Length: 556
Image (cartoon, rainbow, N blue to C red):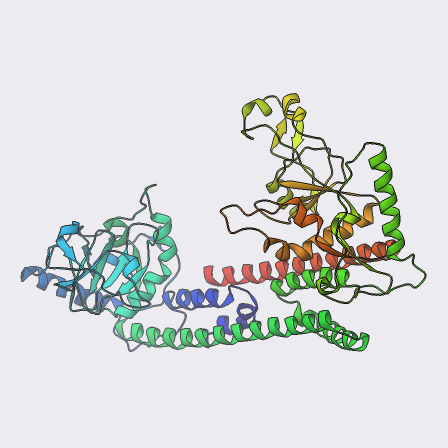
């Protein structure tokens, strides 16, 4: 194997796009003459070029092809790298005949297999060869068996396929490259290397495209014919190895994810402390192997929250005041606020039935309805239409919308900036909420959460949760809502914009820990989420470094 490939093999395997980059490197090394050894006994490419030119001249004399204009030699400043002795820098047009596709009107082709295939673009391409969906008897622009089709217009510029039919008509989105005395597979691999360059050369806004000159004038490293064959054989061998490596990598990644999911599931479902500790020990023993991929870190975040609300994340203290007493204190505070006219009296919520309880909670915890834990109220936006400019002209009062809440996850769960501001008229038909309010979306992106770090209004697509027992309860409720997101989404009707009502959120059953344990849970979750941040950051930096190495390999 090429020493450069061997040196960075492990790097390619560990990077998410490593195998793709390895394929690029193989082709790049091939085009630079660095993939196989040169044989001094090979007739040089200069002799091959003479044969190609003689063959072209003969076909012109026989009237089989049109005489093309002479192409300028490749200038020194155009040559992107040094090529081996015996190779030649040429213009691609010196080695090929280029057939431009021609458009056919809808009445000039059929779908009844009458005539020859008519290929219109990369939509007809297979993995290697195109598949006919249209046929025609109009012979306006014809590709022959073995011609390489190159996409020259539209989003797929640079994509290629090889014609396997005896003849095919081609549309103006395609050009056909026909070769003499040149290894077609070598040319095909060269065009793969040029894919990004052709995309870069494309002009036009509505329909980007490249022209004939972009193809004909492209500089082309021409090896001796015998070496072309050796290069193609080596490329085929190494790309097959890449395919096998990709299968192995996918299998390894899948097994790692499955193992991680199995451990997490057993931890969540553990009925005894001994079973839980066994799985936890396995997780910690294999920690860095399991969390070498971001997908597993994402699942770890979910597991941390789920373990937290199940009472399996921190130790319990029998001296903690039980949640039943905390619930009484919350109810007393609610009654006081109702008496003072600060909140409305709410209807009594149904008690949680045994069959509703999804798991067993620790002693000292209570199953409650979410509405019992604090005050849940919808935002206000009475005026219609909601986007009336009268609400916003010269506004200064922040308006939090569902998108602002969703964005909080990228800002440590904090809502500190908004896009829209109410004016006095807008404020009058809404309401201002205090910093620290937990915002919960009930429309569009259901159950997204974030804390206000500013005083702000929000519409009725957002619910505000106000804790009556302190900051840690708000944080705990946020964790719980995050674990219940999928459950809440199931309540939403299948409409264009999903939504749930306040009643669904209010009656959601919630495991409530003692106040002291809530504090321990919040601190532990914050600690573990910071660890997840570090893990993802480390993975990202490692991937970035590997990416830089791979890019350097490809660019030389």
